[in-house]
Amino acid sequence: MARVLIGVSGGIAAYKAVELARLATLAGHGVRVLMTPTAERFVGPATFEGIVGAPVLVDEFDRDPMRGGYPGDEAEPPRHDPISHLALAENADAFAVAPASANTIAKPATGACDSLLTTSFLACTAPRLVAPAMNGRMWEADATRANVETLRSRGIVVLAPDEGALASRDERGRGRMQEPAAILAAIESRLGTAAAGAWDGLRVLVTAGGTREAIDSVRFIGNRSSGRMGVALAEAAARRGATVTLVAANVALATPPGIDRVDVTSAAELAAASERAFEFCDALLMTAAVADFRPAASAAGKLVREGSGGLDLHLEPTEDVVAALAARRRPDQVVVGFAAEHGGDLVERAREKLERKGLDAIVVNDVSDTSIGFESAENEVTVVERESAHPVPRGTKDEVAEAVLERVDALRSTAIRD
Image (cartoon, rainbow, N blue to C red; front, side, top):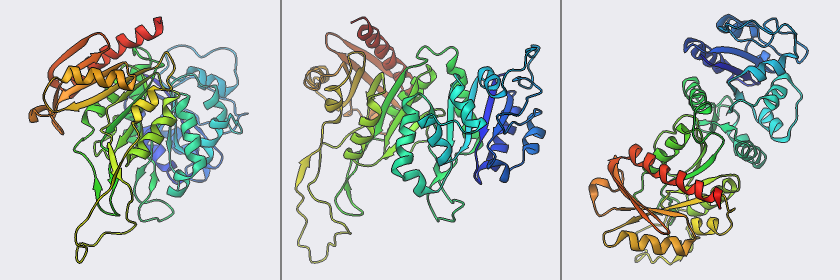
């Protein structure tokens, strides 16, 4: 059993927090709930109290009869009566704010503490998660995006909202809070890794998928990368205890629990998202297949075939994202590239790229073998380093991911010693 602290901020998605509390309680966790005064306008404290079997606190001056304890605790509560928010935060194994409004997200990003919830969140040293819920335009606003990046840089897991119908009655929009079952899975992922994870405290940036470069409003130049290998690496790093950011370029796969996902489309968008996260990471795993070229100009509308006489495309090179990041890395950062080659001497070509781009390693695979190529469930790679090469035999992408991370672990040890 774990002690889970749930913070509920104001918003219509507060009703989903009731289901989150119910699921967490059914899973055997001891659950306590904090609410903002605005949240009380959507769901009453008595609803949560009936589910979790413990009082809900709203005001900083509320006295907690359980003295910071959680349902199911066997130990006697402390004899003194500490300030409630400090006791709850100190005793928590994980703290999730769901829903987290734009206003609530902004406060810990700036250090503001004007409620019991935000004060407790700042005081908590256990794994912290936020599940945003807001209007889609608010989620996309520059201020919100900057605040989210700040939280992520501090190791706080941000469970990016889903697309769907919103309270504002927008037909489609990204701002819908993730479902309670997915949030609980993310909490349990952090609970499972926080105590015993070999990479606890590390921040890992993974890019995955393939970029698309627009020709017009409907057509693009792209590639066949599905993102399976990148998602497997992100999940494996999270299992080891790392805080993982996944920059996903056109990836249709589900996001593993406990991983921060940033969706992008083009090489330029991937570069921008990676640059924002790279400053704060300890290791970069660049699995994304980034386009080498893009159309020099993209039509605003759809190009029409009839009467066009054909289509000539002038292509210009894109930025070498991994090389640009490697050029400004800290000595303790590990940067690993990935290369899909088509037969020949894979190791020699990979080592040439490694030297040219200034990387620690390149993971290379032979896509001429269709059984381990794009969209395959299996892979077979070689991890090429400056003075050695380490073949990884054919296996599932999860198995290959674990083997690759073993080499990353060795590279990290070397970087720390140096």
